[in-house]
Length: 63
Image 1 (cartoon, rainbow, N blue to C red):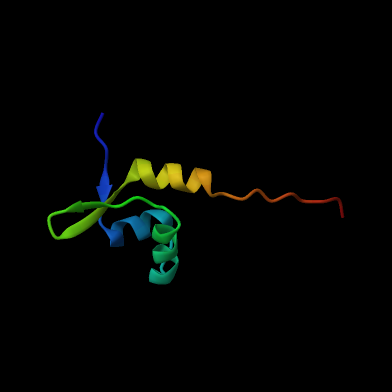
Image 2 (cartoon, rainbow, N blue to C red):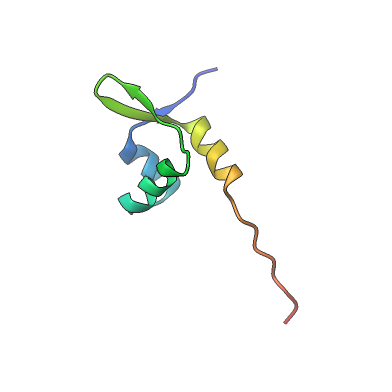
């Protein structure tokens, strides 16, 4: 099975975020990066796993 690897810009597009600060926060919170030569990459699998582990649930009450 082939694993897709994104550069930072592609990863931000995949996540649907535009803020570099938010993306930096994700990395500080444990989103794993891989150094390839002089650049860093992030696997799609790692992004999906990270987001699943860090999602918060919203509970809607009766109105």
